[in-house]
Length: 176
Image 1 (spheres, rainbow, N blue to C red):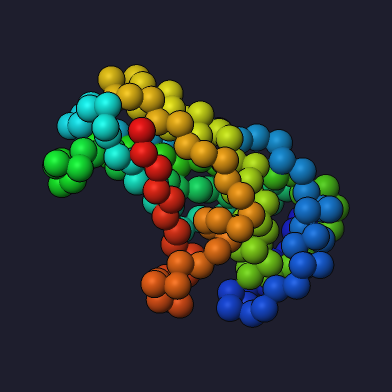
Image 2: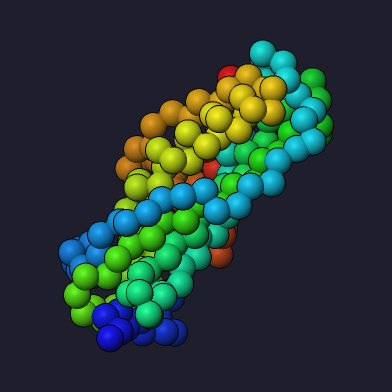
C-alpha cells in the first residue's frame, strides 16, 4: 500500500511549517550512509591548506514497495593552498538518508524540499563531517574537521550575492 502521495508541479509554492511538521510526524529516519565517493588526485597536503565545502542540489525518490523516502545529498570538498588555489584535491561525496513512511501522507514536492533543507541535512551532517575527516586523512591530507551546522547558517540562509534561481546552492568555508 502506498503511504506517500506527492503532488507534482508544485515546486515553487510556499510551504508552511505545518507542511514540514506533517512529514516529520509521518516519517522516521532508518538509515544514513555514504553512497558514492570520488576523490583525488592528491595535490595539496600542506598544514596551511584551505578547504571549501559546496553542496549540490539534493534529490529524493519514493520507493513504493517499501514505503521509504530516499534523500540523496551531494557535497564537494576542495582542499588547496593559498599559493596554488587551482591545484586542489577534490572529493565528491553523496550520502543517502532513508526515511520510513509510517502513515498515509499527501504532500507537495515543495514541502519535501523544505523538509530536506530543514531536517534531512541536520540528520546527515554528522555523517558528512565524519566522512570528510576520514577521507582527507586517508588521502594523506591534514584531516578536515568541519564545524557544527547551525540553523542560521548554510543551507538555511541565502547568500545575498547569489541569484534567486541559484538559491538552493550553498557554500561553507572552512580552513585547516
